[in-house]
Length: 476
Ligand code: SAH
Image 1 (cartoon, rainbow, N blue to C red):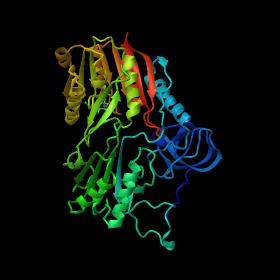
Image 2: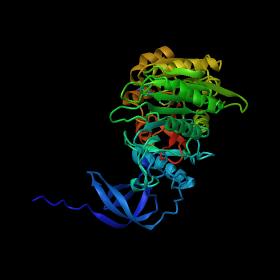
Image 3: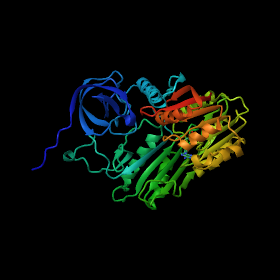
Image 4: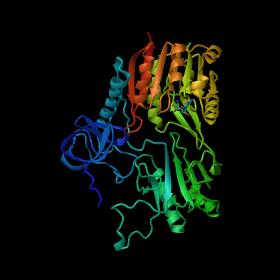
C-alpha cells in the first residue's frame, strides 16, 4: 500500500508584508518567511504552502480577502506569464517605495552602519519603453495560453512563436504581441519578421531536438535613433538573403542589419562571426556630459558590446556618482569594473587622470576606442581579474588613488579587492551597485576605515525588483 503524504499546510488571512527578489513577495507565518508569487505588499490572502525548505517556505495564493492599495491593473496582456515585468501590477510610486525599502533593509540588516544621508530614490520619467536592447527567441512550440483557440475549435494548427522565455524555462517561449519594454519600431520589426516567416513557411527552431532554421532576434535601439538588428539562424541557406532583404525594404530606418549562423546547440553568439548584411557594424549612443547640457559623449556600441540598457537612467546613475565624488580637478581616480569605460569617460574631463580596470578584453578595446572618439587622453586601461590586478605593486606603479569608483557585478567585490581598497586608502570611495545586498556586505568590511556619508538609490528597471544604489564613503 502506498504511504499517504502529509498534506502541506494551508493558512488563512495572511498579510503580504514585503516585496522580494524575483518579483515575489514575502509573508511571515510562525516566524518563517514564505515567498509568494503574484502578490503585492498589503494583500490579505489565503496561502497554500507548496514547498517547504529548511529556512523558508513557498506558497501560492488561493483566495484574496483584501487587495493591496499598492495594486493597479497591469498594462500588458502578457503579464503573469512573461518574466519581463513582474511588478507591473504595483503602481510605479509603490515600486519606488519598495525599492527604497529594499536598499534601506539591506543596509540595516547586513551593513549595520550609520548612513549620513539616505536620499530618496530617483525614478524614471517614462516607466515603459525604456530598454535599448531586447533579445527574442523563435520556437516551433510556443507556450499556449487561454488566448489561443482550443484544438476542438480548430486551434493549435500552428504553434510557431517569437518572444521571450517563460521565467526559468529554457525550452518554453511565450509568443509576444506587444512588448512595453522597447520603443518602436521594435514591436513592428518583430511582428513583421514573424509574419514573413509564417507566410513563407520558414521553420521556427525546436530547442529540444535542435532542428529548425530561425533561432533568435536581437534588436538594439539607441538615443541617436540608430537601430541595429541581428537575426540568428541555425544553418546557412539562400533564404537568409531573401528574409534580410525583406526586412531591409520594410524598415529603411535600420542602420545595421546583421546575421549569424549558429550551428551550436547553445544560443551564445559572441564566439561566432557576426556578418553584416546592410549598413555599419555598430551604432552610436550619446550621453549628456556631467558638466555641460550642450555637450554629449559618444559611445560606439558593437553588436555584442555592453552598454547600460536604460540609457536615460544610466546618465542619472553616473551623474549621482559624479556629484558624490565632487571632483576638484587634480584627482587620480581608479574606475574599477570599468566595462566599456563609460564611467571613466564620463568623469575624465573633471579629473587629472583615470585608471580603468576590467577583465573582458573586448570591452577594454571598446573602452579605448570610446576614449579616443571623445578626444579623451587621460585614461589608462588595464585588462585583468580585479582580485589579481589590484595589488600594492600595481598601486605603486600607477599611483595612489585619491578616489576609487567601483561598479562591480551583482556578486559584489571579491574580499581581496575590498582588502586592497582598504590598503590603498583613497580619501573617497564611490560605490555604484546593482545589488544592495552585496554592496551592504562589502561596505560592512570597508566601514573599518570609512564612514557612509550618503547613498542615492536609482531606478533603472521599472516593473522589476532591481534597484541600483550609489554610496559615498569617506575616510575617517
Ligand atoms: N561600469 C561599467 C560596467 C559595470 S558592469 C558600466 O557602467 O557600464 C560590471 C563589469 O565588471 C563588467 O564589465 C564585467 O565584465 C566586469 N567584471 C566582472 N567581474 C570582474 C572581475 N573579477 N575582474 C574584473 N572585471 C570584472
